[in-house]
Length: 128
Image (tube, rainbow, N blue to C red):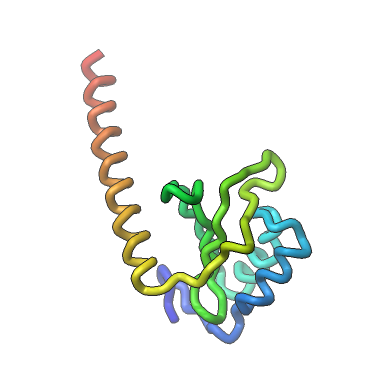
């Protein structure tokens, strides 16, 4: 599998169950992903972890982690100044094709809207 130019040997990825178990025992936070980040960076030259900071009406956002089974979404609704995102592991799920298409669509709308607003802000700042 290739992700964003990084060739990934799926057999070297952590399993979904191992990831959830490790997180359960190490604090279920973004900070607790540091061991996986280090391992993936060493093995692949890429953390293979992404923040998706768009509220979907249920979650403040999700963190996406590459696992053997695909990509797992770790929802969060709380943050902490030292642990960062605090995951709700009971609601973690593997992303399927429809969910990925929805994330792509929402991100596209969000980024297009933000880009347009920033351009308008720039015009206003330039006119001042």
